[in-house]
Length: 411
Image (cartoon, rainbow, N blue to C red):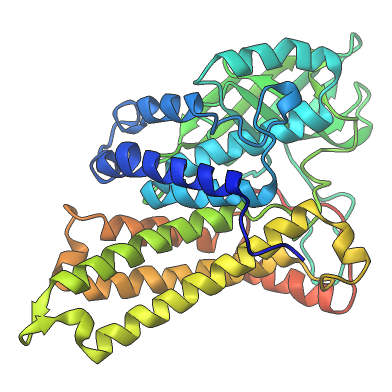
């Protein structure tokens, strides 16, 4: 099992990111969150500084210019960034995770030669993956595998010269408005109409036939999210990511991924809890700080219990993501630990931020303070990746040994 002692390197990077968050993210987050214009709201200056510290390339291997951070270290960094703002954390964390997947594991040498130098040299070079669609039937049925005919509506038709023509729409795509390279997951077809299966293609931002529209969200507003519309969008044969019929997105192990979303969510809860604790020590009612009132003290205690339990689940799932052999030898239960963390953390943090707002009283709903922002940010995680009900159904399937092939199309 993983050690509860962090390495000196992990503690050092945690302190470095904590200081960066305290000095660069927290001071601007609440004010930027209130801006309507995306170009004014998005904190490029923060993103560039974070990239300069190596946070954009954190999980990428040292061989290809990154830090080679494991899943646990990545989750520690993700939590610290999210204490300042979850949108910043989401943007950096996704690019880091996709860089590791694409450059280290999936790309051909030719693709690496084309894209890696641009990625390393440009602090604004971010990555995105486009799976979710407005009306895709992914064949979710309890205890049944997806229908082979279900799947993405977005199509890519292979041309005689090997190029692909993409048509369709993707929505709810994290970092779509800012990403310079996007892995688009499609239903591949031959020129004759034969279905070739789920396939991933790399599409550069600015490719003719691709239109990107920003989504306006109530939470995670310092991040970006958008819709991709493809109309006869041509990409070269050399942009095939992996193999035809074996989408890198659909094949991800279910419930055993790195719990990146859960670490982000924990950061929101921690920020709300720490703000509420500081306020309770300062606010005086009945002649003493309200933290000394039993009801407030017990509320804060319950918040601390939820957050510590959440972190334990996240760290266990993160360690397991890098040590999947621990499932096979019985060291870990044969359960989707990331899915378990998803349900518990999202619901625990939702309660934590509401309790924190309650401690602030009337000040909790004032836009001058970030408490209302934490409530909005936390709400998103009840439905990120997929809903908690779907996660519970997947956990229920695992209890009887049902193994579902493929993954869901979502953020």
